[in-house]
Length: 175
Image (tube, rainbow, N blue to C red; front, side):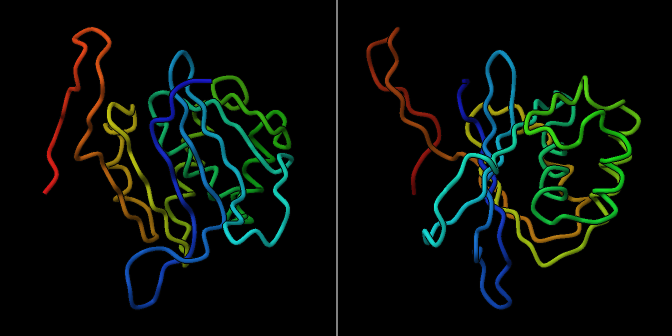
């Protein structure tokens, strides 16, 4: 297990206010030797017992790591019928809970999935928190191509104790 460097909350947009309603799923990006997106259902009001059987893990491509997460959202959260059809056609085993994108789908077919997911419109909202030094910091501009509400939160301040200097190192500022 690597360091978590990003989190995505998926829920409903509010008609009149900002924020996010009815968070249904979370995705966590784990990075280090090999990145992984881990998607889990979220029941923040504890209406159902949590189960690990609904968790899905994808080993994303390095080049399009953020878009890989958006395909996961289209497939497992929005359950877009055309995307499901494409995934069943292109993936070697679409029902696995652990997908390795470099092995389980041809690159040109994955590009087609990205294009399709960009066209999905719905009332869902994505709230993306990108932590310091996350690989997807360089990829967030692709969000302009998607047809849903999106909010991006980036790190503005960090205070971390350094084992080398034996003192706290501060990056950014708090107002």
